[in-house]
Length: 348
Image (cartoon, rainbow, N blue to C red; front, side, top):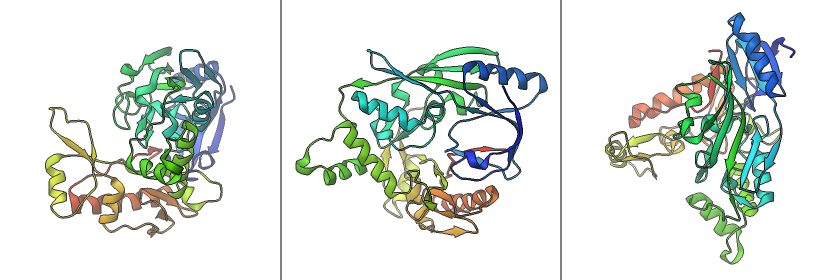
């Protein structure tokens, strides 16, 4: 394994922002992962695992540690409907493989940037689907125990945009493979209202779309919002949705509704069974006075989707955080709702 020094991280992120990593290594095999961990451990060097960089904001000063870029590749399918993908595979390749096989359950996740290894970490989801219900097993290197483990979905601790990998065990595991149990011959998932409307518009005579047609429609929706990575598109210099859709109590939602007409979605009950509601963060941001295209220095809001913060050209990480903070304060002051950032931050 070659461990290089002072490698700029900006080119490895969709934001195009960030300073250098003190050390940097590329893992092509599982043996590489173990070797890098063995290099870092006795030196006391903090280790950060980098995948596609699509959900990451790196500090302007960089990261005083070792960045391990996971580049393991390969996708296999078996007769039981299990798609086994290496962590370094682009997520879209995995979705396209499922479409070729005619296997349902991840078609609505088409167009999401990043790699396979990031999907269990964030419990990636969109347009009525998420990966938690279809993940069967996650293979990873446990840095704390210096051992390989295979974790079931239950052991991953999935919740809305959460898992053990980005909460209680953040930084402990290096994911190298994910097994997805899909549905051969299944129909597309069309429960999301925006997707249903787009399907009705696209499908002549009201015919149900194929899996591939549903995925194509999802990609067009994402393209229209600037959420599809397109080269030279300034709205794509982002980390996608910068804020999570907040889940609030029914009482707080009724307070908000007394002053306006917020859209809402069903959410899982609270710890004691109390009813809760998910409110679109984009709606809250717009109602707090931030329109598409709003700019603060070199940072801004996408011209096509209020939820995406963008690098307008030459933006620093501090500018992105300043804009995010300004938005979050305005939303909390108006609605009493605290927005939570979705991207991972590094080096701050």
